[in-house]
Length: 506
Image (cartoon, rainbow, N blue to C red; front, side, top):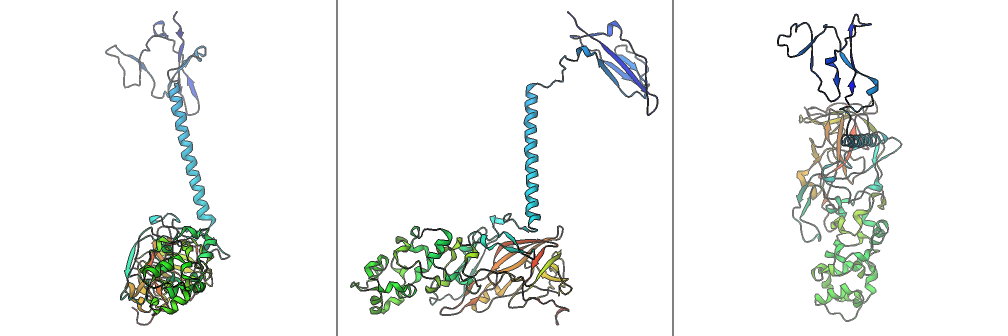
């Protein structure tokens, strides 16, 4: 049985822009009526350009140029019949899968925008990749104070999680045996932690008072178990003599030699007779012990650190040449948060300004400087035609003052014998967070009004047989805060703003 598809064609011709004129209905001839299983005839619709059908082999309907469209009308009685455009199950599944992908992409984008907004605007500062940085270098979180200026969150800063973003090295001239434990070379690499490079003596004059800690207090702060460590893990023991060890741990002198296995083995291998006397008596009767280091005769790895009674309660600064001890070579010390040091760092909030303008290195002739060094002062101008800097604001006197980028300007630094390291130079900057490190502005981005900053550290060998002084601040960089225009910035003291170029400068 053949079903017929009733098709009517209605032509609408526009008479004007508002109304449509319904043209007379064109009735299909019996031959034009289509059956469901029959092939549709192709009808060519043409305007006045096609006036003839010379070949007689195509169907042509001539229409007026103003006709907008010809639309087929299908009888409602056939509306429930499936059409060729109905999607199959595979198409539906693929469309649903694509919708899921679109949803996940949109959700991820939305979450990223929210997180970015929380970081950038809830704190008001963008810390250069604590982050997003080279070599996975981590930097301190921001803590807001009453002045809304960014300060390090000391509770989250440790020597272990502070990383160098670039490598470097330095050799020490004329290292003598009179300074046991002193290394001939200091090397650091990108991604290496600060604790692997810096030594206790480098922070002797910073106010941290790290040297006042002992192993027992460190274990309580960090939760380490001292039984898990050997004597070799406390580096300074390698160059201690027996008299020096007793001076650091006074209770040892009253113990017999056999009661302390590492000392008994040391005496045995150094061919010093053990007559069952106390350690104190043995030292008194054998003055040559003052010249023999423990690490020369015994393998410190073979003994637990707790095998020497009282070593856990002795302050680090009681041991000889403690200054030469690498931070990471004191069990647990690299994991101690800075706010747990005996001396807690306090930012100098005396003067806080605002980043007014960020300018790149094409600048020149900047004499209104507020950056420099302890040795050269903090008003070192820039005339090297690479004067990248920020101009700060905050008061009439401060407005227009320039903090130079240390990437493009070096200044005099250091003192004593170590002051000659790195050619006696360090990047220009300021010390709003004290002497432990120098804050150095670094890479300006004039387009988005931002500038990064780094921390630079120094090498110090104070006290001891010879005071070698301190090197310039050139051990770094360790990424620090990133600032944007209008952000507050701690300037600290001393702070004087030049009112005219320094005499003798161009």
